[in-house]
Length: 243
Length: 271
Image (cartoon, rainbow over all chains, first blue to last red; front, side, top):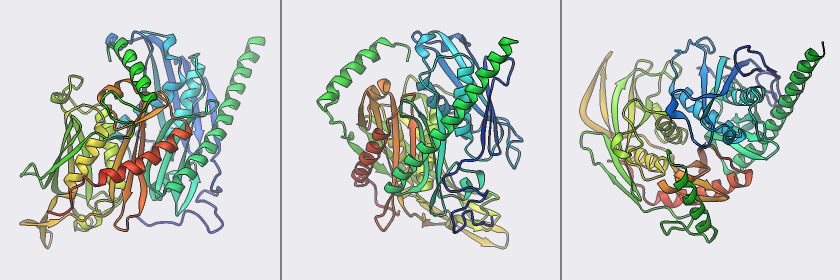
């Protein structure tokens, strides 16, 4: 594989962004008719659709929990979402990401309000160009809100990578593949707590501390976009009511 | 967990004890359980190790096989890490394909071993673009008494550190495996440290009892190269609780110290 230089000497990235600049991110809420809640996100070229069902009766029944709602999440990639066709069967990566996505969202959900029920969160990655788990988690938190699930906070997510010795925000595919490290993080912004943190690659202790700061800044920018989308969605809903 | 009452009583007890820096098994919050590593326990494997971390018991075996390289890295060998939560290890484990916990564990151990650049895969090439060595690292959980992540990472690492590698001879397109063995090309060494968060405290090397009531856990792997340079090489939060940014940074500090302690237990390389 030939290696292109990904960052110019003046700190401009492969796709023209500055080191700490996000791609254009656009959330849309309530895009599906059947799901109880839904959200669609275009995060640069990454495109993800999330549908939420529930709280609904648990199926199979033995999954039901006496004191809270059972939360199930699935992160799944479409075969056509990547360069080389991906088998639609869930890979080990998708199984792990489903788990961490669920664990990133669970702290925000008042699960104790709905004992014996299930909430299903389905994220379908239609096109993948880096940061898919961050985009899926952020969109899923909006889909949950759309479904009327009571939440402690939104969940906002962002990844920081080290590419050619520099820390960069919001990683695209190229940077992920050639980068030295990748660190996705998710937070509940108004509570200032971390609900997802993963890291791979080599970082010094100092670089790690800087990465956490940078990721937090990115998460707050995503949070602003999420709130914008919610406002727009509810405004549209109200406009419709008034007709 | 079917019974929600006993864990919540236990949780209260664990949190109260932790206020005075103690744990139910007598350890301090930062103590690991005793570590015992035995290597070369399976003669038919190229490398093997058992790890006892307190009562947690794990075995790992390394087998080398000739296979095809990945198209995007045609001149590099391959390392593959799998984990089996076999049913004899816990009444909670069931037969069948690995579940999300086994897959997560294998992938976190894999990331530690891979990202530290422990194995020099460029030296596992037999015929560039055609034939390479694949190092299969298989981890079996034998007794689940908490903190499988660190026990499994230690087992996989110890098996690789003491593994030998078959030697292949190439004549034209023909590959013949000889009777000879060579050392495995190794570089920086990753050590994983896991902490459970319960209440507002971090518990190093959580026991099963602590894991049952934890909010979440954080695993941090530090790699140390031959220049004694330390870097963070993998990290994973598990469980549905949250960490404050301060807790995250504190956990990394603790992991840095504890990983050095664990290094003293590692077998010396080469067989």
